[in-house]
Amino acid sequence: MNPFHFDGLVWHWPIAIYLFLAGMSAGAIFFAILLRYFCLGQDAWKSNFVRAACLIAPLAIWAGLGILVIDLTKPFDFWKILVFYNPLSVMSLGVMVLMVFQVFMFAWLALLFARPLTRLTASRMPFIGKFLAWLKPHEASITGLTMILSLSLGAYTGFLLSALPGYPLLNNPVLPVLFLMSGLSSGAAGALLLGVLMKGRPDSKEVKFIHKIEIPLILIELLVIFTFFAGLVLSGGAKLEAAGNALGQGFWGWIFWGGIIGLGLSLPLAMNLFMTASAQRRFSYVAFTASMSLLGVLLLRNFILYTGQMTML
Amino acid sequence: MDKSKRFFLKGAGALLAGMSAYQATRASEHSSPASQRKYALLHDENRCIGCDACTQACREVNQVPEGVSRLEIVRTGPHGEYPNQTYHFERQSCQHCENAPCVNVCPTGAAYKDPQTGIIKVDEWKCVGCLYCIAACPYKVRFIHPVTRAADKCDFCEQTRLSKGELPACVTSCPTQALVFGDLLDTQSGVYQLVRTQPVSRDKESLGTSPKLFKIRAAKGEVIL
Ligand code: SF4
Ligand code: SF4
Ligand code: SF4
Image (cartoon, rainbow over all chains, first blue to last red; front, top):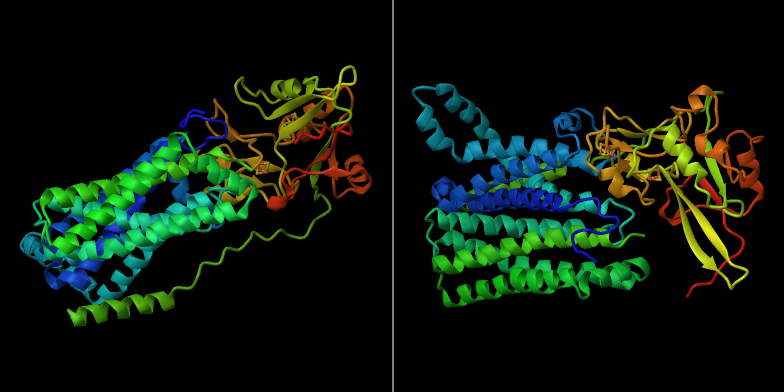
């Protein structure tokens, strides 16, 4: 069987990339918020890692939406998704979350950069400073909502696929949790990679902070992947068959064991533990670990999307 | 730092508490007026000879382009030993699910159920071609129409035949009368009588889709282990 062309395949890799980018956007803003309130405080905007995360969040979501629109059979009719809503449709709810998410994300970003923005625009566009001062008292609500929306966005990427009743592997309640977790870690990895590329110090306290969260996150991800497949195997029937088709021999089996479990999760886990224990954080270590995490998440999205459609009820 | 942490948690907590879960409400179906119909189709596999007259009639009447189809007859066999061999013919087309996954997932409402007739239809104009319904349909009968670029499938010939008071093309073209079409709310209709008195079954009922394509299975079976 050709791993990229088979009977019953409806959604191709652009959807996997869209899911990857949406998850990364959610994860990046999530970690930016954590860095701001639990690590750096008021001056967070000066950190290259926070800046990297703040670049990734909007760019990734726009790129993802762009891919989604181009992938429609009628790309120029995409506005109809924004005008007509179906409250039962996960996609429709997701679009709603995406729109509201962007509003609050930008409000939060504006508050994060409030001081430099106010200073820059003080003489020419004083209304911006006034607007930011007006936003300021609502910081707690904006932050809380941005956080909740980013988690919803991360989970939505999983719900989108788990709402398909005909595919036993996808129609799985653990999938949204799995995609949320891997989305968060891709956001962290993206912020680290772009952060060191933007000349952030690889042994800074931001990197230590993110690594400290990444280690339990990877362990949880491994646990969730185990639960995902154990659930399929124990359900028997078509679900067992789907798990076998996905994890067994062949292209996607290699991707899973070598690419996702090996390169994407175990290697970054080992590197993170090593860097924490040896207190050695070099540019190459941090960049390599983050790249492997990103690769793992991208492979996971493709793996789930394709193998999920391989077995039909 | 501590202050900012507490501040953050307070805000997040307050919002979490304030947010009420979104309640998906099913569009309530209004009580039935006299014109209310619930169309259904029955395929008697014992009568079907696999001649494909129905698939050709469907293609012609509904102008279904080559490469896609609203209706297919899937042949399996031969079953049994020579000279007593038989084939089975199964009909593959939209089941007009009462609880249709394609309708539930469609983001724009382009896939919808006509409350008057129970027919699952596609609003070509509203459809953006996201393929979500095609992935969601457990019976794999939806496709993108190469000309309109919208999702398409069997609509019980609603536009081409029912609107003129005629039976669906596949039904009238069948030389053995293996297809019976009618209104399930009309206790006098042929399809109602057959569903009541014959051992009918439907595909993938366990998914809770409540299909309205009924089947009388081929009597001559074959155990394949
Ligand atoms: S068979 Fe498929 S296309 Fe037809 S109503 Fe059911 S889910 Fe929709
Ligand atoms: S392809 Fe069209 S009909 Fe199908 S879910 Fe998307 S918008 Fe709805
Ligand atoms: S009812 Fe009409 S559209 Fe449906 S399969 Fe028969 S001929 Fe085709």
